[in-house]
Image (cartoon, rainbow, N blue to C red; front, side):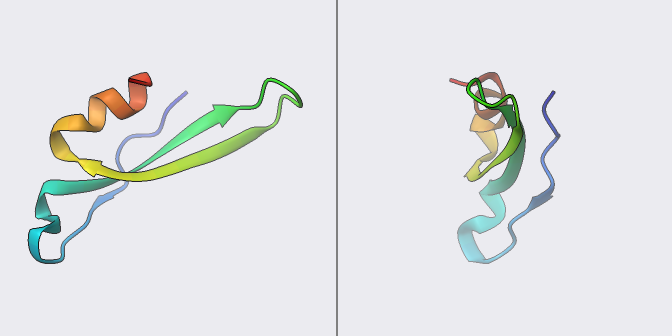
Length: 51
């Protein structure tokens, strides 16, 4: 289950980038962790699908 983009980064050229947070489940322990990244607006769907 993935979260939507939390907010847009708004500094200079950063208006074209978005901060994304995704919930990832560990295969070893089964615990949930959060994977956070700042990606281009065009690549947000790819971040959530794992590409």
